[in-house]
Structure formats: structure tokens, C-alpha cells
View (tube, rainbow, N blue to C red):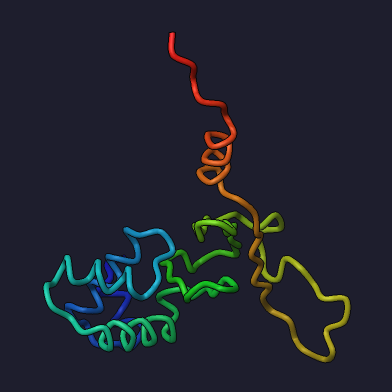
Length: 148
């Protein structure tokens, strides 16, 4: 389904900014607001940061974008919304990667006590060090090559 149709079905006006935001988020990798703003400016030219904030809020509220908030990181946005997946986050560089849920359906985890809540979702972020940062660590530890 095209983004125009998604916006209409969600009851939102189709605007150039919203279309550019959807495209930018789809092409990106868990982008924060500044990265979305930069990408949208690349597609449209001038657009205000406030317009991007407002559109992201509307798109998220309509269920067209997923917003994740890893601790110590700004909110990130993605278009993968139709499944139950989680995220891997790098403690060093902040990279975020999707990881499928083992059970495949929500919620994949249940609290020890639900305290009367009807639990329908578990938002899981696994923390560690990404392959790129681990590779940098290895390069730093290797002794310099000796001249011949």
C-alpha cells in the first residue's frame, strides 16, 4: 500500500511533509528527529523542525510509525509496525537493530504480577556492544605492525 493510502486510511491529510517523513523513516535506520528533519530537507528543501515534530507525533498517533525510546537516547522512529519485534541497542554508539520476538505474538513476556493490568505488549530492548564497536576495540588492542 502506498503512503498516500496509508495516510488517508488513518484519517490524516496527505501532505508533502508527511510523505517525505514516511519515506525518510523507511529509508533510515531507527532515526531520531534531527535525522528525520535532515532527510526531509533533502527531499523537500526547507521544512521547519516543528513541522517534523508535529507530523511525527501525528503519524505515530495514527499507528503509521513506531516510536522507541532507548534509555539515554532520543526517541527513534521506524516504519516496522505490523509485527511483534524488539530491539538491540549499542551502549557505545547508540546503533539500534531490530530483532524478531521468539514467540512471535504480543506480549512475548509476562510480568511476575500484572497488578490487575491487562497486558497486551512488552517493549524489550537488549543492550550490548554492536559488531562495529567491538571491531574498533579489537583494532585498538592489536599491536602496531613493525617495519620490515
